[in-house]
Image (tube, rainbow, N blue to C red; front, side, top):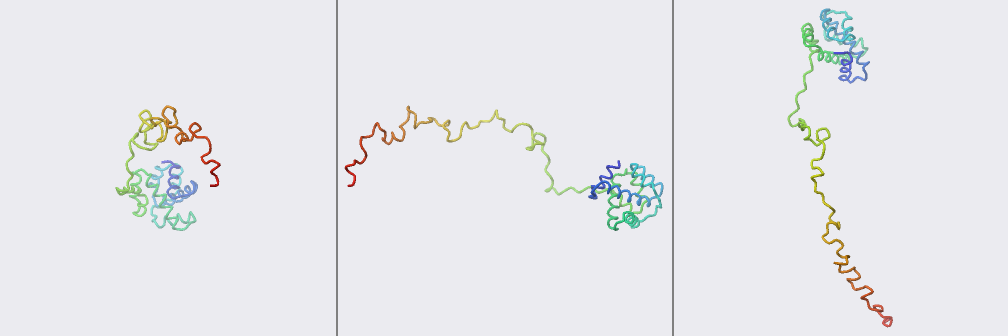
Length: 215
């Protein structure tokens, strides 16, 4: 256990804004809690803590007869805060402490403390498993997924195995006889030729002679 990790855990669990706030709360709570221990128990606790935290525990006094409500009142007085905040801060710091203490030290302290204070050092219970229908499906094995993290390089169908269409549906490339209507070898002629309206096949004069106009 190191000081920075302990303070970071307190700040994270308590939603505190910075490490300085966490440090002040930890100092007050540990010093008040140490007053519930006899000197030997305080030394055992200090031995399991990094130097800055151990100093607050050893500062004393160590009366060994502090009740839970008395602990909260001392924390409230030293923080200059309401009793509700003192209760919250005490349970926060001692909860982190209980999670990080060696099992032998935690058992020794809990044996000496009353049941209420001993309960504050109990490790947090693991969260229960979610119902089966809410559980996340297992991650696919590497190379079997469809994400950047689980997929394998390359595509499922390599370009070398693909058989793309050579052209779109209306392309002349797909026609058996492209430009059939306009090629000299197979064409039936342009529109003017099919309608017999070319100069070669036309008759002189207009379709309606001038002599017939006005009738």
